[in-house]
Image (cartoon, rainbow, N blue to C red; front, side, top):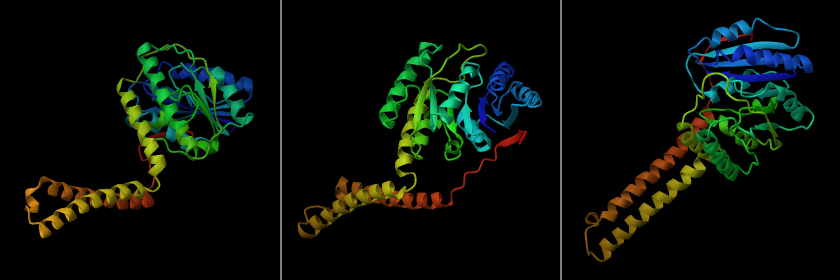
Length: 314
């Protein structure tokens, strides 16, 4: 299998057949053995029925597969499940709303196989979206470049290509699909490129994303930055903060006890700072224990996904 194309869909019943036909035409022309993996993320329309019908129309170069979630878990969960099942030498992700142009697929494939990139991200230089979406996107791309040191113009573009081993070594959760290049970089894959792609106007429906995705996106960026630095050894941060807090509280208590014993000017409990010192020691102890618990959880953690209700073609 040369190519796996992962397409998360949520209520995209009007687009699925058209997209599958466009991809089929491209891969047949390029002679690329391809699997399309549609991930139905809890759609409430007829998306899953259409995917099941599409899965029966295999040809020499194309196989259509599908995975259905019982409820809407989000794009990250859908992509992660697609990565688990992908078999192609090159893995491409794209949206199911027809705004990503399948004619770009051969260029993505060559960028991985010939130019030897680990990841190639699409750049929608000319976006056919309203200003309410494009302006915040530019702001987030600027902040992400600042945090990550990765020179990409469009981190959030869903049209990307990867080597198979790259997707097998990352876990995408929460809303972190926006920051897959960061996850890839922190796994040691640093050959990350960018390619300008055609962004088509939306033909059916409307965007599924609201304004809350921007606040969630910033929090996810902070989460990734924290986990990449301390995720494997949480005791390094929680233990350090716990020790500092405990020592501050202990130092204050020692000072108050010394003043009481040698100067007898006041009772320790008459001063508010005494209670502050107790609070610091309690918080310090809790942070230290949190670090221990986090270390134990990491050692026993298993990544399971029992949310799949149905599969086709696996």
